[in-house]
Figure 1: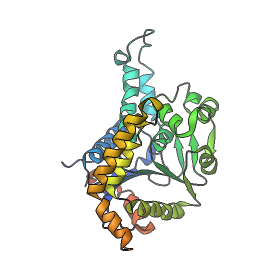
Figure 2 (figure 1 turned 180 degrees about the vertical axis):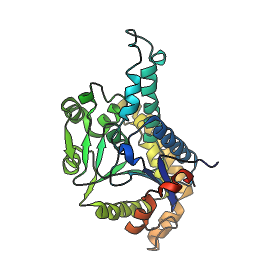
Figure 3 (figure 1 turned 120 degrees about the vertical axis):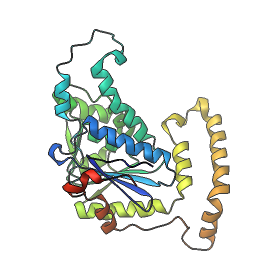
Figure 4 (figure 1 turned 90 degrees about the vertical axis):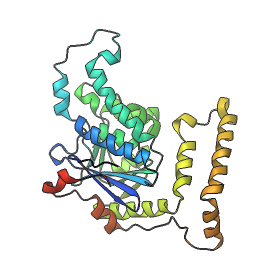
Length: 300
């Protein structure tokens, strides 16, 4: 892959896992257009490189993501109001908003396990980003909120992903009342999968989940994500075709990683794809690069 200089995120790779750290401290890692562009680039890299086994996303300096960048919102206030029923592609504000949705579509359909690690807060777009992950880990005192309506706008592009994770009732509860919930409350709502007491505990928890993931065969994980996708939701009208598809995926796995996995089980040994992560590893990998070197950060 050609070199790419990142200015707003830190990207590192270890044991075929991509570690992405949002690193815009002055805006609390807000999702400005240029940040989304860099995240889109890394997501495309993860889609197109089969050696990548998982992706971890986190914010620097103990803060996950403040959501959309209010400064970029301000510039859109000067846009003329669109005519009623105008085509979204002809409305510059709608077109700009939709770009974030294209990124979320790509991010949510990554063929690998995705883990979001939340400290500080995940507000608005940050909450949407977390809801696109397969697993969300957070500290107990982290904050989550769907707060766009308090600004007179709506969580347009993230709402479907929040809805898919926690259901209509809870999405409306958060959005209609601008409620901010703790990590503990977010776990009760289904946003968070597991909690840690503090940042050190969060590093240890992440290492445990990555070690767990590494015991699963990489291609089998990809096949499972392909099978259990939003487009393949189990619907009675399509069940037969879906089970046919599942049978073909199973057959491919049996001739791919199945022999090694079954042999390892029978021989009571670790499979060749297993590895271990430590809290020290993940902490070092996700620490932001020094300011002087941050513009030199490149994809692996």
